[in-house]
Image (cartoon, rainbow, N blue to C red; front, side):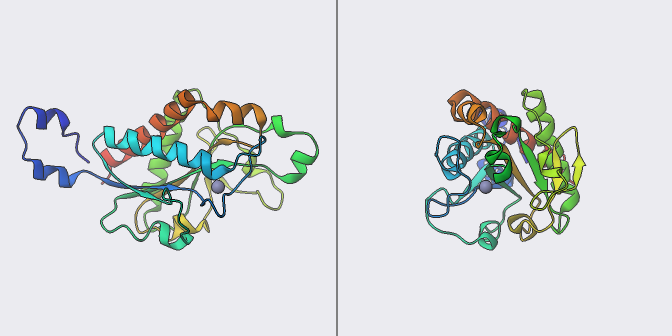
Length: 228
Ligand SMILES: [Zn+2]
């Protein structure tokens, strides 16, 4: 990780030093053919993921990182390929938006569930660094005024995810394929709950997308700087 732009402007470093900046894989969750969750309005998760992952990528590039986008081209891609087909990558982040249990929707409780959640896998070969990055992202999301959703810890089938950090909204999900197959540290972020109509509207606003993206990218940059 290098913050080279000011130094480059001063002509103090050769441009070859840019090769040392981090290469971050930014994964757009799902594909147009298999678009994930459905928003309260009917708009599909993939479209939300596409907007936010583009903003995360732009924010990372602005910070001096290199970015490889995955699944932004609309082509089908298998889950185990997402984190493994970019040689030389330093970090993997997957961007998603959340739904909720159908029973909660059926019970008219859409507005009861909101907020972001962050996932890491202990089966990832760099679990400790993944957790450090998840913490850095959580800290920045909190600072940006976002709240963790926490409902994935509900002790029912389909949820019941162990919470690693309640304040920061970090959960353990060992068998998330993109996280456990990643050869690099890896984090998955559910940015918010599109099945909640109020939250869906907020998540669609350009200013929300930029502020979420800056918080997520800021966490990725910070934990790379502090990487061993
Ligand atoms: Zn998803």
